[in-house]
Length: 342
Ligand SMILES: NC(=O)C1=CN([C@@H]2O[C@H](COP(=O)(O)OP(=O)(O)OC[C@H]3O[C@@H](n4cnc5c(N)ncnc54)[C@H](OP(=O)(O)O)[C@@H]3O)[C@@H](O)[C@H]2O)C=CC1
Ligand SMILES: O=C(CO)COP(=O)(O)O
Image (cartoon, rainbow, N blue to C red; front, top):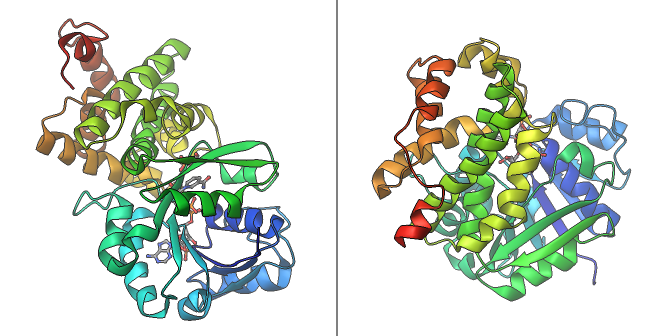
């Protein structure tokens, strides 16, 4: 593929890891970090010790703390930021973007206030580019991607050509990219799996076993799909990389910040103490709030999300939450399918 000029907005673990994938493909990359010290460390020491400690970065990776400079004349701009910051950064970047730029995001969450998906947020801030927006998601811990450990992801866009262009831009022999037509399903799966990963960490922290975790993963997937379908996602998407794939990796990997946060909660730390200890974003906390509100608005049953919400924000004891989940009314596992409802 013709080499492109790409901006990666977000100098955290995932932005830095995706920048290394682009460099491997020979693209010219400008990585934007709002912190000058991080940009300087990348340019001079070829390290990002705050987010990927001990990892040598390619010398050709250039970083800047100037958003305008980062996006200027770029063919592709990747937003790799915590969900709550995307709108603000998109608004600041908008006047400096090339007219025919392709925009992709890799955030896994919803905007809390509006409960909007991140591609919707980008569409509102960049209204001339709605046909040129995509999302990347799937089971992909940054710590493994920078080590070139085999990884598979999906890129979804309403415009197939945009997804194909991004696939070609990012695909390497260690980073396999599939295209996907279901933007809603990919965004919903990638966001809601973080709620279940918090639950899986909490279950492990309480000392429950593998049976409990398998139950959370499987019943978690059921409620993710229920909300997703109420938002017009395709059911089959949740059986793919951005659904069950990401759910499994996040619920079982010690790299996961959401699993680690849940684990600390299970050990008895308060939410405030946990967030104080985590030096990276834990998207699942705000996503639990957003999904709780969405489920109420759309009339969707999400028992695990509801109990986690009570633990995080209403002071409910985690063991009581598990007890209440286990003693719900009797039901059929395939109830929705049997009744033919969502
Ligand atoms: N890490 C991973 O393995 C993966 C992460 N993701 C998703 O990617 C997104 C980014 O996560 P990740 O890189 O891991 O997060 P990190 O916590 O590692 O880094 C967050 C980055 O965003 C910056 N940032 C935070 N708030 C703002 C803001 N208001 N304006 C500008 N920059 C800001 C931080 O800057 P500063 O240092 O100054 O605070 C930092 O550079 C999340 O939605 C996550 O779920 C998806 C797949 C894999
Ligand atoms: O989304 C991820 C892996 O696919 C990263 O998950 P965490 O944010 O929990 O680390």
